Length: 80
Image (cartoon, rainbow, N blue to C red; front, side, top):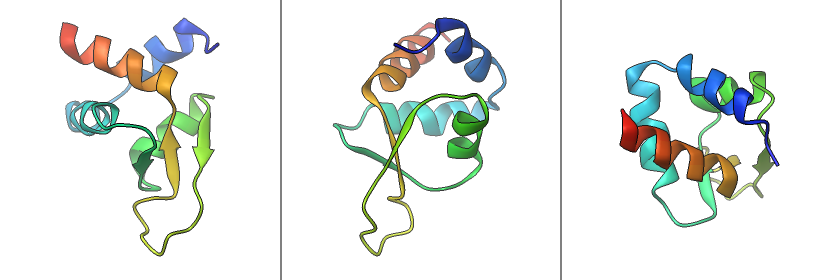
């Protein structure tokens, strides 16, 4: 289980554009592939768990947003 305060703190620190990208990723079915970029870096810095995906030759599929984070993002983006 992820500490809810870590999720809330991470979400509060995101830019509107990052929130929009996070919501789009969270809406996908698992596995939710993410690029190694500022959004995935913010998750790592916040101490949120991610899964490393197998290299597919596509640079945008190197990190996975896990179910618990995606559920939080969907709830948070609905309330914005």
